[in-house]
Length: 509
Image (cartoon, rainbow, N blue to C red; front, side, top):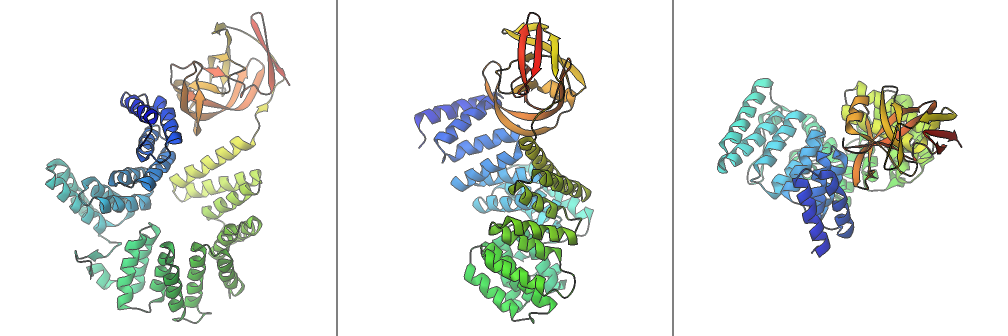
C-alpha cells in the first residue's frame, strides 16, 4: 500500500499528464518511485510519459520494471508496441505472446503479434494471428477492426508465397505437421526453430524440438539447439545431457563434431561457466585444420569477458576482427572493452567504425545506438575547448539583473542570451534547436531560470561566439519556447567574467 503522500503525488502526476504538462509530471513520478520502489503503476505511468517525450529506451526500462513487479497483459502489450516502433521484432513477438498468454481474448495482442510476425517474414504465422485478432474483435462487437484484420490477411496472401517459422498445434497440444514441414528436411526445420530461439521464445522453441526429436531422437543439430534452450531455461542437467548425446553422434574431429563442441562452449557460457567455455573454444581454435573462424575468437572473448579478463577479451575480439573485418558487432564489442580499460580514444574509433558498418548493412537502429555511445563517451571525455583569449562586448539589456548579450551559435544564427555565471546549465529553446538543426545526445534534469525542474533533452553546440570570445563543444538543455535562454557556468568554466558599465568582459583563467 502506497503512503498517503505518494498517493497524493501520484494523483497530481496523473492530472498533469492529462493536461499535457508531462515535463512537470516526470519529477513527481521520480519522487514517487524513490519513495515507493515497488509500485508498478508508477513505473507504467513514467514509461508512458517517457514514450511521449521520445525516450523509448528508458520507457522500455520502466515497463520492464513494472512487468517484474506485477506482470499484466496490458504492460506486456505496451512494451511490445515500443519494441515494434523500434523495429526490434523479436522483442515485439515475445512480448505479444506473453500478453496473449495472460489474456487470450486480447484482440490488440493478437493484432500486434500479427504485425510483428508479418515484418519478421512469417506470413503464415501473421495470418493465424490476424485471424485470432478478428475473432476477438467480432466477439467484442468491433466490426471495423475485425474487417481491417481480414483485409490485412488478404494483403499478405496477395504479396508473396507464404512461409511459416513455426509448427501448428492442435488445441490438445499434440503437434500437427504443416505442409511446409512435411516437405522440409530436419535441418531446414531446425533452422526455422532457430529463429524462435533467437526471438527469445525458448519454451515454444523447445516444444518444437521435442516433437522433432520424438521422430528423430539422434538429430545432433536439434539436440545442440535444445541443449542451448535448456541452458537458457536454467535446466543445467538436461542441457548437459542433450549436448552429451549430440556429441556421441559424430567424431570429435569431424565438421559435425566441432559444431557440437562449439554449441557445448556456448552452453557453458550461458551457464556462467567461464573457465569451461574458454577451454572449449581454445580447443577448437588450437585444433583448427584451416583458418580459424572469427566466431571462435568472438565467443572466447565473451568467455574471458565473463571472467573479467578484459585484456584477453580485447585480444580475442581483435583476432576476430582480423578474420572478419566487415563485422560491425566485433568493432562494437572491442570498443566496449577499450572503454572499460580506459582507452577512450580507441573506443571512439571502434564505435565509429561499427556505426559505419551497421549503416552499410541497413541496420539504422544499431547505427543510432552506437552513435549515441560515441556521443556519450565524448561528452565524458572531452573538456570544453576555449579558442580565444576573450574580450569585451556591449550589454544590450538586463533580465532579472543579469546581463543580456548577443551571441552567434554554431555560426548559423544570432540570439540575445542571458549570461548567468551561477547557472549550472545552459539552456536554449526548442525553436532555436530546430533552427540550428541540433541532434539530441541525452536527457537530464535541469532547473529553468524561474526555478522550475524539468527533464530536458540535451544537445551539443559546436561553437558559441560572443564578440572575440569563442567556446566550443557546449552542451545545452532544450526547453519549451517560453523559457529564458541562458548560458551558464558550464559554458564559461574556462573564464572569469567581469561587468563594468555597459560592457561584459570574458577573461581566460
